[in-house]
Length: 252
Image 1 (cartoon, rainbow, N blue to C red):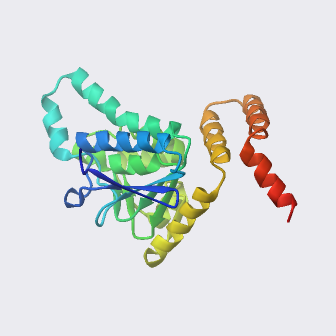
Image 2 (tube, helix red, strand yellow):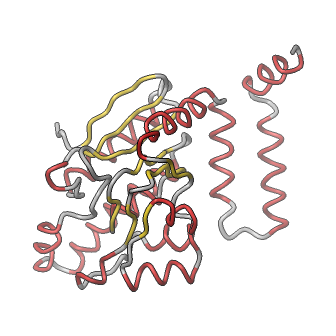
Image 3 (spheres, rainbow, N blue to C red):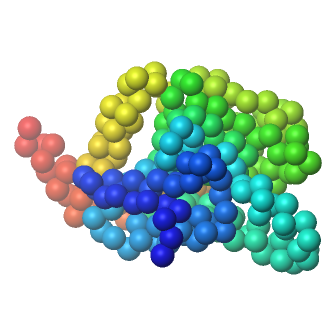
């Protein structure tokens, strides 16, 4: 067992806390394994409606563990490729999980940590938080996380962030599309908690269909997107959640 990621389930929300506050929650192999296990747990547990990802201490996540990165300079090309794919597997699991994954970002979300936040379905941030990809300043490349970055903010802003390493505060991150919502630091827990509550109380099947269709639209033509929407629309009408929710609404 590892204590790299702590979990707590309450009100349908599984809170997963990156637990290396002394290292600014830097991502190492043990944390990747722990996150993978948490996402598998969330997928199988019907009591989990939403996953909330946050960091212990003052920061969300400062990126990859620099000691592990330095040691990897002596590994073979294939060993490093497999390690990178192991990290990328977290993003695939997040995308495929039929439940919302919400990043709660306080403090710094940098490099791989910024990618981890961006890979979540929603990003809730404090005004004082910091987002950025400073890899180039360390002779490295934001290679894995660039896939999420480019999709989130578009070409020009993504290229700027990836090549200059400049940092954005929470308000700036929301303006370019890295954060979904930004709150004053003093109100963050209350406001973020309300968003999580709304998601946890929503129809699980409706959320699952919405998330699946949303990401399937990547690279799909306009007409194919409409056809996909028609398929999802038809299937969603047959769910118990649909019948119950619509009947309850009509009785009001």
